[in-house]
Image (cartoon, rainbow, N blue to C red):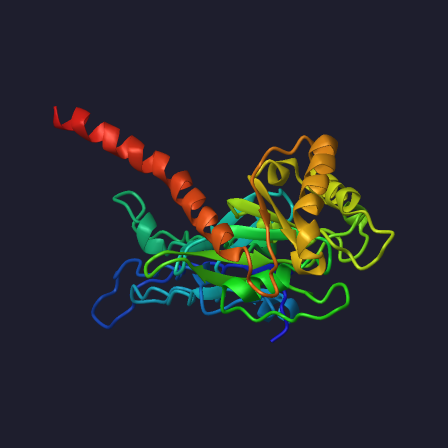
Length: 357
């Protein structure tokens, strides 16, 4: 199935049915009074998060979703039937935004989360509602209210704990294959990855986290070069970014330090908030350097890189294709993710004694 992570659709809830003005007319009941029924409500439009869907392809080709109109009221106090609601199922992580105002209408970040997107119109009132001691034969009735309508954009942002960042062919897909059961395409040419891939990394019997691999960036990506930055939105929900660097590029003219610095620059240019996330440095393809020269190569790279970027975070030299060095990396990630969750638990624990007192 084709991976689609963006779509624009038009949704309109059903209008309410009209109320009616009628009077009871039966033999031997010459003055039966008003008996016009109310119109039915219009059908509403809901969006639902579904973990069994992983693409917005259904909304790329079907663009209009219209709720059913409520039926008009009838005589003999008969109310009109309400319109049926529409339920639009979307991948978990989909963000629904009003195209006209930019307001986020729904963030489907949990499986089975249901959000009312467009509310159906209320049905009109029949003349029964207008009778009184001074108005025994009302001829008033009201029309149904129109349903809400929106032009919305759908944007899928995958849910992952860790995101992989780097140049094409830095080894991101190879790493996710080495530490999880995900099997993204791997080849010896750039831009092998054309859409995000998710892999569950199991650290222990009951411990795991989700890793996301997105297409590689190149210098100028924020201005549209390569695949641009359209896939970086999939890293916005992550808690840790792994910046993979090919420390032994095949091209003799390539400068790993310059390339790594350029990626950070593109990240800052695109979204400063994303650039502020914890970002770890992972030096890949150590197997391409003679064993006796590896330590010096790592030290030389770090010296130049830290001078250029003021980086002072964790560093993990690895060989993704063989898995060497990946175990310390995933254990460190698991520990960091657990620590990120601990402050909330600690706050709850601190509050408990006070409540008991």
